[in-house]
Amino acid sequence: MTYSQAILGGDRLALARLLTQVENDAPESRTALIELFPHTGKAHLIGVTGAPGTGKSSLVNQLALYYRKTKEKRVAIIAVDPSSPFTGGAVLGDRVRMRDLSGDTGVFIRSMATRGSLGGLAQSTANMAQVFDAAGFDIVIIETVGAGQSEVDVARLAHTTLVVEAPGLGDDIQAIKAGILEIADILVINKSDRPGVENTEKALKSMLDLAHPTERVFQHHGQSMRVAAPRQDSSSAPMWIPPIHRTVATEGKGIAELAESIAQHVAHLTQNGGWVIRERARLEVELDALIRETLINRFRADVTQELYDDTLEKIIQRELSPWEAVKSLMNGRFK
Image 1 (spheres, rainbow, N blue to C red):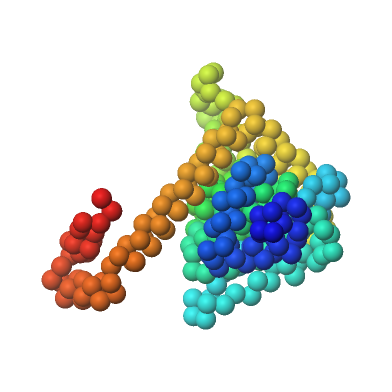
Image 2: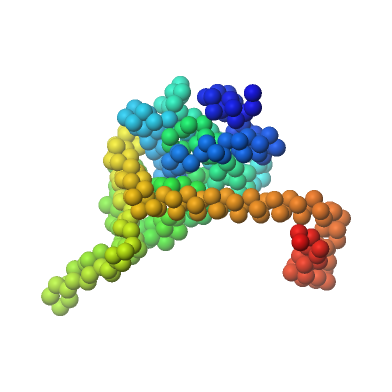
């Protein structure tokens, strides 16, 4: 029996083994991914990102518990941890905060390392999500490494992206200038029992007002002046404005309301065609990445190491520019 047949039959051991093959980019995994692909496209991919210390793992734990106990959905979790640039190792410790889920056959937790990949995700994350999708999991939660402003890759992979903030992690303006807030479908202020939560929420609302202006009232020389929001094209779909939720994940507070917002976002995407648009964009990114990887592998197989080293030495000696070197190395290839 092949990996794909076993996984479609509900074999968890085969699923675990294939995930390892996928992470290691083994040749067997490519065959399985091809066979499983027709069975994908049903799962809801939820990305969870944010700075370190915001409580992402605890939030994921509570979300998974809610979906299992209240909605009876099968949940897969991909927890991505950073790799050391010196040793190449990774702690893979996020599952320690998810002990509440242990023993539940409707939950599968997979930790993986970035292995030097930027953007908060590992190269094989998309393939792992595809395997979980084909295996029949209703929801796939992808937790990024928590590196901050560079974690935008999750928005290209997920249907719904949660950006998690917490009070006391920096001045209020940090929330506005952090690039990852621009990818948020839902904003979560976790650890909202801490002092400063009002300032954090105020900063997030200010950021949202800049991105999605609403009617505002100003006092000018003692008189009220109204500034209307820009008119939206009547032919366009309704705009989704990211809601802000307060949670205390360690106590399970605010989780039900957060899950309801996630469901509303899914309904919004489904009704206005956004789901199809995001799915197309996600697959386009995956296709482009595979094309780049394939071309690079072909190039390295075609160009000897000696020729490559000689060309690099000419660049170092300023005898050849990088552009001329590429043209020389590619000459006559990939016609």
